[in-house]
Amino acid sequence: MGTISTNEWKNGVKVMHDGDPCNILENEYVKPGKGQAFNRVKLRNLRTGRVLEKTFKSGDTLEAADAQDVELQYLYNDGEMWHFMSPTTYEQYTVSKATIDDSAKWLKEQDVCIVTLWNNNAISVIPPIFVTLKVTDTDPGMRGDTATGGSKPATLETGAVVRVPLFINVGDILKVDTRTGEYMSRGK
Amino acid sequence: MSIHLRAKTLAKIRNFFATRNVIEVETPLLSHATNPAPHLNSFCLDNLYLQTSPEFAMKRLLAAGSGDIYQICKAFRESEIGRLHNPEFTILEWYRVGFDHHKLMDEMNEFLKITINATESKRFTYREIFAEFLKINPHESNIAQLKTVAQNNNLSVSVLSDDYDMWLQLLFTHLIEPKLGQESPVFIYDFPVSQAMLAKVRTEKPPVASRFEVYFKGIELANGFHELSDATEQRKRFLRDLAERQKLNLPPIPLDENFLLALPNLPDCSGVALGIDRLLLLVANIASLNEILCYPFFEA
Image (cartoon, rainbow over the protein chains, first blue to last red):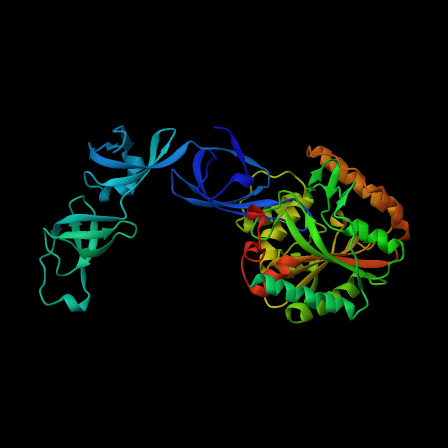
């Protein structure tokens, strides 16, 4: 894909660093009054999600990464591979258990996820920010105790376990924030 | 709003110099030669250079007997773009005959009090500030030690060449500069001789360059020298710059022979250059030059 130099490393540009595709988050030009200029860069490793900060000499180059974020619909999993499809091209993608990692517990069939493709392979899956999932298991509800702010664990249809208020019952539909794993509200 | 702040501040500056009998001058922005320093990129048009500062021409005036002078003009540095950099910027440069760098720091202290209401500044040598923040002696360390300091401060660096000054500057810009002058301006003076530029060198142990820089709220504001008038030594430094340029595959620069010819007649003096746009940014208490320039580079 060719190389690009420090002054083109704008927010959102994807580059290869230490063998992994990375997203540029920040790029600050730092120059001593009389001397070599530097670029202080924040990058997110698109495979691991880790953010690293690194200083480069101004004018340094990195290889551009053939990486992009696309919306894919989750179809099903067979325990080893998770299967997705593009709602626009109908092209199918498979993601290994290791790659999907913790995101798996939020995925319900037909939900649309943000999937990062690198050289057309899926390397990370971000579930929808808010998901609505049915409670499959929790201790019986306790009436009249809603004001105390107590909570209890509830298992959802996808296997995720979240803390919920005491009045939640099996069969309730909940809205959950997948970024924090926190209960938001009871849905219909 | 920023055009009023600029006009008001420039008026204060002109008044500051008027009361001290320093006269305002104008010198060419477009010249047949320029500063060959390897990390200064001049815009070049048909073998003419836009000035990176008015230094050489102003020293020719001083050598011709001008006496104390100042100039407010545009300076140009290609590829310097960022939160605190714009390729075209406004520079204030002034020279005081008979001043050493300490006396000029005294005047800079007064200047900052009057123009931007700064409080009394503090002074540290380059050696003191490295000792204070990083516990090393910048004049007597080696590259391996500097790399260890970077590592111990979680500074992750892409492969850099083994250039001692570059490592010093990396540590300074990343670990010291952002913390300097949070309350009042800080002067750093007596630089390593390898960073002397156009300053006199004093043969102490170790020898140091009579150069200072001014920092306020983590931002480098000005750079001053007790000016070198030894033309042979200056030519030697320029030739070293040209050799370094060649090593870095940068285009050669014609040396300013008019400047070198005048240099032996330069009276004993000190001079300093200050970024006006950064000064305004500090007064307005904002984060980026884009908010202080009426048309930043990308909109120019």
